[in-house]
Image: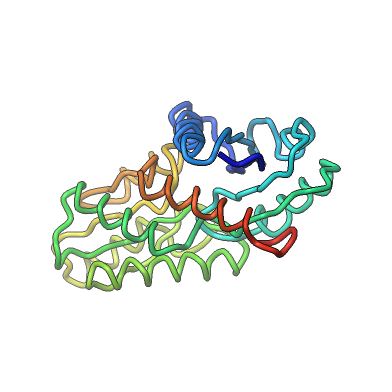
Length: 231
């Protein structure tokens, strides 16, 4: 185990299942790298700054976001600065990543998707174009694995909306359409996908062993990196 603390930063949700999932992810990662703390940038606490103030050892902060928008580029650095902690490294966001694409495809298969079925990658949405580009890269990674074009739809904020993309694919003659949930945990956004008109909706990424290993590997690489602050 390493003496450097790991702080996962999630968005925050009022969903009990979503909060429990983040806690289970932290517990699973702790078994590989040592005690892992959880923090949130919205909805509930503790905030990253509050968690970092309680840590005296060096720390690695990992944004558990699937795309890098305002929270990753602005909120997280500000929280680190506000904490006053003098030895913090920040990893890049969790996604996009080929590991996540592999889990997305498995979730689709579990939901009944078969080769030839249309796929809509459903993301939360963002007003930050950098985050939208990340979602596009995630769709491309999934497309390469599935051997099929993947369309992108958003649950909130951005366009097009998931329901509209599903309807468009139906109009184009697609017989079966499945929604791939580019979401880490259950919550309001995932619940909305049930009304998108698809033949099946995949479960969120969740606490998958591959994701646990991805988080642990990112942490180890950051601890070993000679570069301060960013890794």
